[in-house]
Image (cartoon, rainbow, N blue to C red; front, side, top):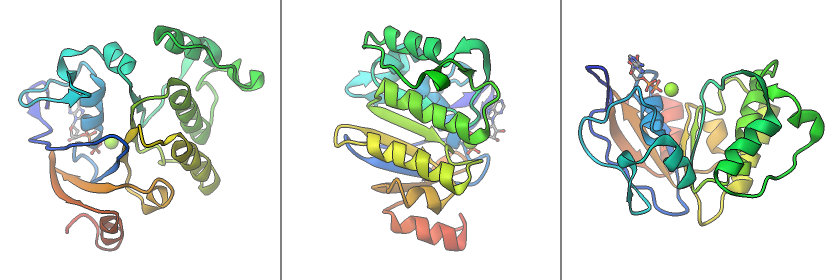
Length: 215
Ligand code: ADP
Ligand code: MG
């Protein structure tokens, strides 16, 4: 995958089965967020080679909305503020667009504008709330733990964990073992310079924690 003529992902071979959680770790600039963006269908990225299949469908032929309707959700590494749009309206629109019943949330929270004046931790909690409402088949969490204190991390991680069922899959991008102590991954990948250079079980998290990415 490339941005303009800059090649970023150089051959990602990844299979995620129903019910599996995969962690993707790797140094800054490796291409982790690019991988998320490509899966979600962000238009600034061009897929130059290869294919992506989601539940038997050609993902690359689908628009970002169609991918969401099919059950893909991506949380933002840097959630954006949307002044003038209340969370209730935001979620109602998102959920109506998926033709599901609107679920009421706490009025004092839902009346606030999307992420406006929220702390970093509150923004991330709002991401997980959206995820809970949308009930995705595949959740992609891009450094959801960044900027969280220990309590917020626990709340976010337990939220993610409580949403996980044998029918759901997840890609969890993180630098830290502390998130993966809550959301225990089945498989761990190390992404470096646009390629997956190492794949292993959860023990790989300890190796990275100790030795860094030069493994
Ligand atoms: P990671 O999430 O692993 O830190 P990214 O996927 O964000 O890495 O970025 C991978 C590389 O692609 C970086 O060198 C980054 O500068 C580059 N990149 C990402 N988005 C763009 C863009 N819109 N324009 C130019 N380069 C980009
Ligand atoms: Mg990133």
